[in-house]
Image (cartoon, rainbow, N blue to C red):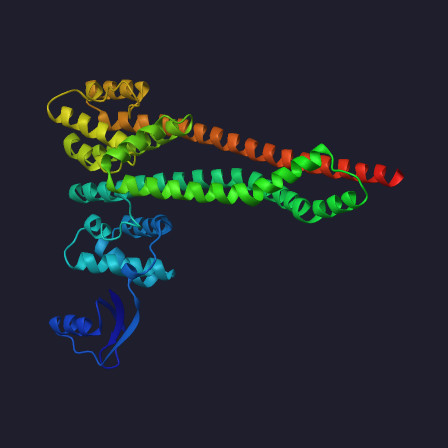
Length: 396
């Protein structure tokens, strides 16, 4: 799709989205418009690089105008001229065009899966059907804001150790490939020999020269094979996803990530007056881990057959819901207040997820710093011992 501007005998320019110029003229003729000029402006949002970073600022502007009392269609129409960012403006134009053709906001967003994820689209669809869009938009914006803050914390925590590690490796590489060969040549010409730390450094340099490229190549081939197999074999995808859940620390983080996503979406949908069967059907596709998704589908079928939620989700190995989550859900099921129970499950496990991510970041940070200090220590020992050996050789 492409974007064109057209003008009617000196009036203000307006925009239209079409496949090509002929298609744009045909659309205008159907509307009874005879433009004096039709000019190509740019490729529409369909052909541009789509980015999930657009979601949060776009939804914030959408909520601001919608809460002021404007319908969604009028809100998008105004955003076409108010938004300064070209990508956000093109996104508003594309969504408004879909709405003008009779689509709902949720259906229009489905055309841009690389911008709007399913855990954003489904609550909006449910909210539109119940006429309760603004509160759901606020919940989605809150969730996206929390995710952004968590990402910033992780990036900030990893920046310093990564910098220190890169600096240490740069110094070691300089010593290995520029300084150490000269020292080795001088000692050899004078009948000396390298000390043990210096020989360790030379061996380490050989590993860097030959071992690391081969390891990277081998890991790249393995990753490509796994990606190909996972893409073409659902059974292999489930097996590898189950193995990932068994990895210490990482498996729990993956489980809690899907748990938080499911519980938050279920709480939002149930709060929007969507029945439990439909809410669980919409939520199923948002689970990233295929093994957990298969468990969820099996539990959903049991619930459709009349089983209680806690009984349906009781799985002995690598369950989606933890024991604490099932206890909270059971209370909500007994008192008929499921949406608050799922919200409580999300709040508790989201805090636990933040804690575990912080632990993992701390572990990686400590490992990176320890590796950097090890390199610097070996480097210093190699330099000092080589210089001392060189001094002793001169004295002799």
